[in-house]
Image 1 (cartoon, rainbow, N blue to C red):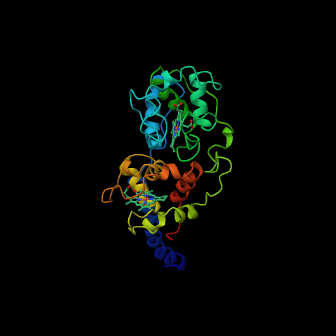
Image 2: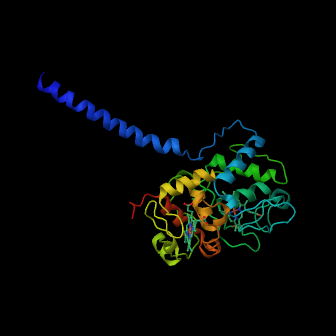
Image 3: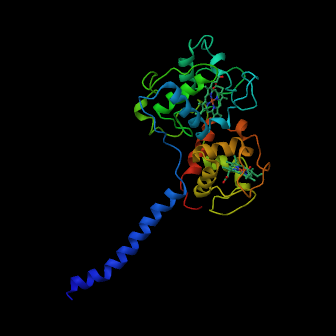
Length: 281
Ligand code: HEC
Ligand code: HEC
């Protein structure tokens, strides 16, 4: 054997093993959990087809952590945000002094929730195009159709409604875009310490204190069990801890009022931080 051949003979098995590891590492997260992020939405879809997709989108992206759909109780349901039942009937004329028709009103409510505040509700809703929901333009159209279908008739197609403000940079927009003015304390580490989260939750993978560890893998697993995106799952777990309790965890221990104590900007900061790999600290 030449020395080159000997070298090759020695390296090939090592490379094969390395390749196997790389393949395995890539394979695990994909088979274990495929985030329900992408809906196949095409320009030829009818408003009714889009509305059906829009319903799924609102469920998977955490809108229902705050909104309810309760027939017969008007705008004030049991949620942290307005009740959606019959929203299209209720908002058929837009809003006083603001957007004059339903579609423009819904579009504004999604892109700039703070522009018009529903009476008796606080400015806590993150823009639908920002974290945690991160709706694409096509998903926005589907959600508008879905909301129109609640008490009305879906009517918009892809291209009918305006693109989000600053559309070019939406995907890359920082998690805190849309932060209400005057809000300062959005350092996630300070929020975790200042609200007692760290007393009940470790960030070390698998370490259970009073509640489960908040490492990204564990959160992804919870999201998979719940069938929603990891961002939406984290958001829901903080604002509505009892909406879903992981098998083995105890319900009712985590304070139920973080949704009213933390601001939209703080929630966004927490979601972004808990989602990111933190080196197992
Ligand atoms: C953190 C809680 C929260 C989340 C999450 C949230 N919203 Fe809201 N939403 C609110 C609140 C509070 C209001 C009322 C204040 C305002 O108008 O901004 C509101 C208002 C609205 C309105 C206007 C309702 C009306 O009766 O006129 C629409 C439409 C809406 N949200 C859609 C959505 C959609 C779609 C999502 C998911 C992409 C979503 N929201 C996620 C809290 C939330
Ligand atoms: C008194 C203890 C306690 C405090 C304080 C607390 N939690 Fe929890 N948390 C729990 C328990 C117990 C659970 C599991 C049961 C449940 O889902 O309600 C939980 C669940 C969670 C989950 C879902 C975890 C998973 O893997 O499914 C998240 C995310 C979370 N908490 C974040 C927070 C954040 C952020 C704070 C602070 C703003 C906080 N918690 C404060 C006890 C606490």
